[in-house]
Length: 162
Image (cartoon, rainbow, N blue to C red; front, side, top):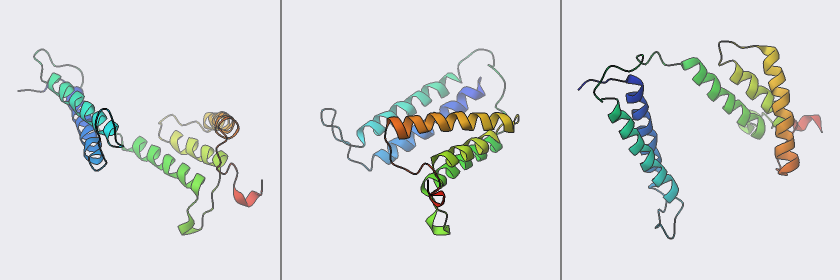
């Protein structure tokens, strides 16, 4: 058998891997029954459905007919690294890092750092656009999470005394 669509094949493998991981981790929780679901029920069903979808997508990649689309290119490491780093930096800004003496820096500074680091993932980084996006996201996040939802976490760095 020959793979006709590399993108479908590798997408199917990815769905199967993520679905199997969800199902595997959720099997350590109490599953329960359909009438009385435990905490592992939803992730187990989701994992099985995701893995099943992956099998269908991967199987379609072997379908007869002409080859479909371009082959899968190189893996994009730069965006992956910057997006993961942006999320880690945001978490560190909200919670601080007591092990190294970094206090919580707050929501606003966290959003600015998150936006700038995530923007570096693009080949078309523009500092002015990232700054405008940071301001807009900060204003809307402050309104949504602090004012509307009344969530209690630091908005500003503690050392500013605001």
